[in-house]
Length: 198
Image (cartoon, rainbow, N blue to C red; front, side, top):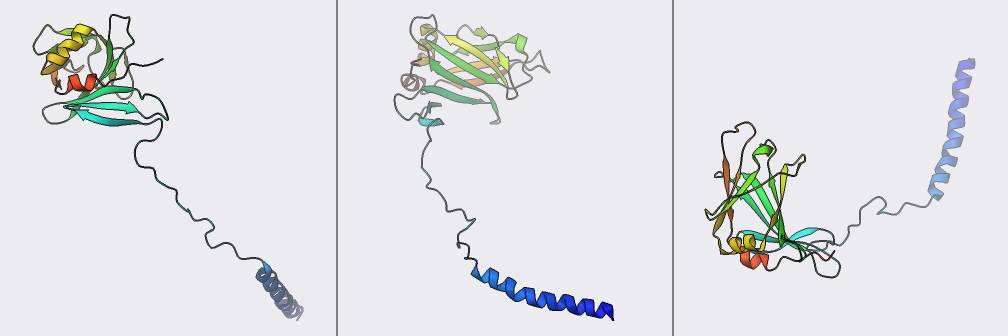
């Protein structure tokens, strides 16, 4: 019997509390209908400040610039080089240098990892005398040769039809991998490359 009374007492207590609890919740203001919903934001077309973008294409070269809020945007030439099957093997970025040095421009040539670094990188323009350049550094993406280009080098690129970039695979040191660097559009593109101001 005491158990039944305890159970009935508990039911009675809950019955008394429930209406009071219901009254409390009915007095709480309703949450706004859009609470927790994303209201969206305006999307700006085109490159954002601080982002690189392709301003224009000149033949087989792209003029890649860095979007600035104001002032002249820094721009460089860029070309991806592929093998006969269309796989990217290398790329080259060419940028102008301030006057006063032997090099009027610089280039960064990126090649795949597992390139034999001691064999260096060779560039030949239209079958002329090849030039060899050492690799500077490698990271997780590839290995890089930082090269200086003289006024004579730039003139040969402007006159030329194509260059050949040659590298040696680490796993096959007796082989040469040759990729074509097109010079179509180089003259018009290079004339639009900016000289860094700093």
